[in-house]
Length: 153
Image (cartoon, rainbow, N blue to C red; front, side):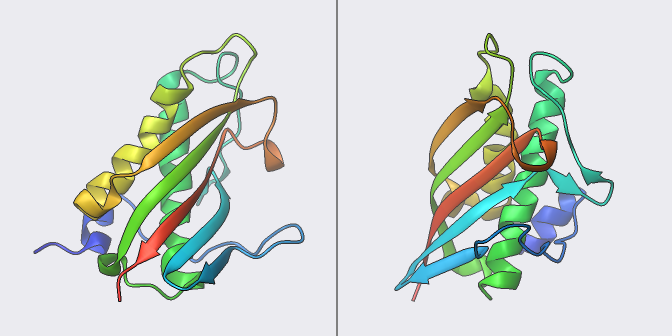
């Protein structure tokens, strides 16, 4: 059986060490078997993936940004919460998309995040989701993802 980390590698990603918060918040909070993950932006080795959907970015580029944010989401679960990805179930994701007022394909951008999460975690990655357009996101990021997970045991 392929591990979630190995599946992530199949997508071409290594699980990065999470970046420290740049404001007054914690990356995760936990109560019982529920973990809340603070917003994770579209950043990777090349820095923050910035842009505005409907202006400087298309849906494919936005989906790639959402995928990066999903990798950072998983990184927080492993490195900040100390969780084994085999023992988590994603309950809800909220995907914020920096976009022009007339952009209407937030759901397609958010699929970049959802597809990676489900691809890495399988059925335990299937989740409820909201995709929301925003005028701007922190550090000019194109996408930000936050979520709620349940921990087994």
